Length: 258
Image (tube, rainbow, N blue to C red; front, side):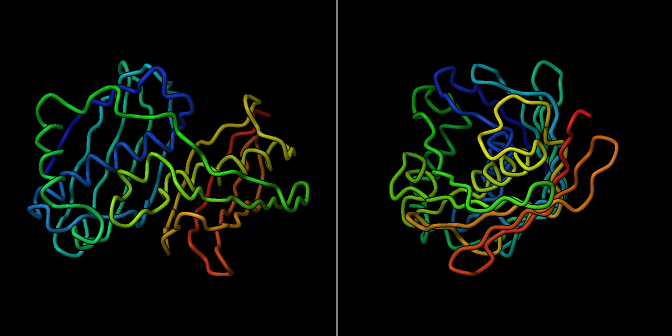
């Protein structure tokens, strides 16, 4: 089963990142799986085998989203997908799996059906998105050239929890990954301050796995560890833990532009 959609990124949205493009592609797959399950089940983030980053997409851009559902049943949805803008590849997802959960635990089934009808018709209102509030991040340990650790404080309340999810708020896995990739970029550049600009860029993320939910108010410790570096490419292991419990893992390739 294939599906396609269009995402017009609001110009006034403020902060934006490739991880949010991945969220949009994943949402397209999620809506397809929920419709097939008659809105009695919904998938949550589980595994992303590979995420390839392409051209930048800034607020104001219009993205063409496409997904291929390889398998969808009461247990999980497996899919691949992509996002492009003006014919340029922005992001590609391969070998993704989202385990299914009871819809009523997270959203009102009737409300989700109405939203789906809106998305298939006129589309979501352009002004429904509020500026994104990221979790605060504080560096707690830096071993230059080897590892960088930080903690993030998940907000108790944020506008996106109204969608993610009304009945059981969960911090989006893509926002957690966004913090982890920022930490990896800082390690690649040898800095602890925010790595805006600079020469490092995320090229690829592999074996990304969510192992537990991250909830409002939790303090999560994230770490980027350098495994190898050659010919301007740094390969890293990314982890996140809460109260000593591992909540996510991934590997990332960072181009240092050397």
